[in-house]
Image 1 (cartoon, rainbow over the protein chains, first blue to last red):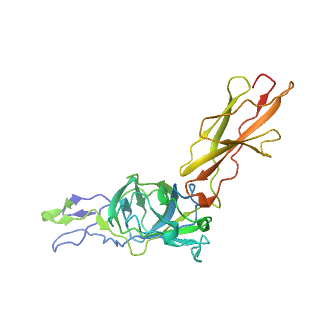
Image 2: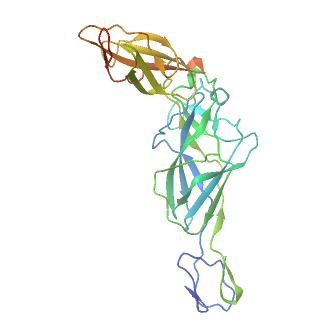
Length: 181
Length: 131
């Protein structure tokens, strides 16, 4: 694409053109990402009282540009996950309420919205999905009842993410990643 | 941000936000996880030292032996930490085979002890030696 003789890289999009410019531009469609719970693949590290476990998500990018995610923002450390008896997260486990299970995001603090940098930036391709296992980023308190065994947890929502759309080679799905502080 | 002709600003990236209601999925096991990495090493005489990988969240461990097979039946040798050196084991002139396994109990005792770990390799005990 040329604008008045200046060459642009094929991955650049021009956001609007002033009158008098020659050439043409391509408007990008950029939308928010959606992140949903995923039962596949099963987490390698299951969480149990006093230990850490994995969380699995599917990230959907409906934009016409790749999106690069570099950090996530977490709710507070006392925002607990709801427990279910099945991987479809359809039936509540009444023997393991959120307050009983005390399952939360690792490294979350008493302040909501803290930012945590991913070990590796994730790139979700344009109009694509990416399944990611966040390794050992889930914690469980040391006094969860036995009713919390064999339970599937819907982790509390991220409060925000740090992400940009533009260019990048999509991360191969399924991927593993983590934040370590 | 690049500049095009006549100083036109050209965006190369956009900040992307998260739609409301993101979810992730975690899972608990059916029981307290059993310890891993159990090994048995001959010490002096007919003593054996059993070691295993420390388990996050565990408050105590119990060590077992079996003279029948790697799957039991098991006899408790007592509670302890890794490394755990057994008392002198009883062997025969022809040698008695011993397998060793470990269970873990979490700080959260409500979850109960784990099942026995995968057993160590067999150690053969005679009346005076271990191999």
